[in-house]
Image (cartoon, rainbow, N blue to C red; front, side, top):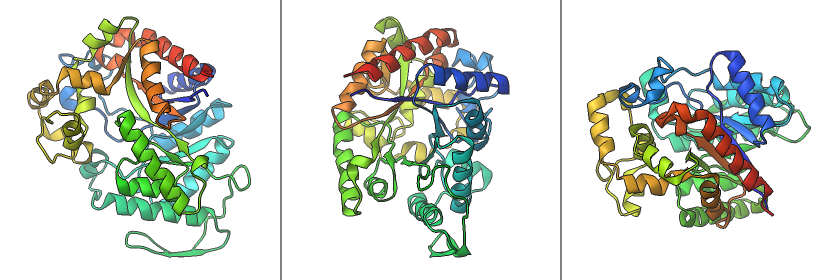
Length: 372
């Protein structure tokens, strides 16, 4: 069977370019556009023309439109493509607000909104004075609150450690009666995998090998069955970066760029160790869950990135021709995947290749969608 392909939301400014990019994604056959819900982007320490030519095209790596507003705007300028977050969290937004916002988006998109959600990242919280303590427990309660508000007509109560409701109501019904926005959960660890089976509509992990994908997909299915849900009703997705080129050797050269190495550096030390590598930050480092890149200078970060082995970057990031990338995705299909989100990061290393790489990724979409 074919594999639907989503893409990470176009970051283009101004508004006209952003909307044109959304319509283009729809016309080119993408299943969904998912926006990373960020306040901060790539580290300023790496946002220099010495590190990435992309810095010449944008003064700041933190220029983001609000994600909810993006989904709303794209919803009224497209007709088919699904629109959602990849992903938000329940720290900046109270779960009651998430419940109302996504039902609102459900109407503005005419039933095409997706609530992609995870436990959060320090870079979007700590600099703004927001807590990042026990984020998985907070996420679990938040999902329970969203479900409770969606699935009950009258006022409800909820007594949790992080959230409390008393005679609280959400009177807005979904665009299609009984069909609430699907909840896609970014889950890699045992607890969030069980949470996905119990409370989610889709599993949305990143940075797993095909073997790990198969094992963890089974954990999601088992949790769904134990919760009295049909495991086959869930979507089994994956988000992954890719570097596109007409020749494999071109993509291999691009992978040596520090910006692309940084995407691999974000992995926890345990992931490096499973692959027989040593993380530049040493054992026990939890990756993006504790990284505050603002604390590092350009020289410090570049020295760390130099210690990320080139061959490991090649193992982790999808790269090469459309045939090469499609083949990597199919390895996960054999492990249970039925949907994929691909983010083309070629332009981070060479902005001049942006148009070419977009066309090559389109070819991947066609290949995967036409698989018998």
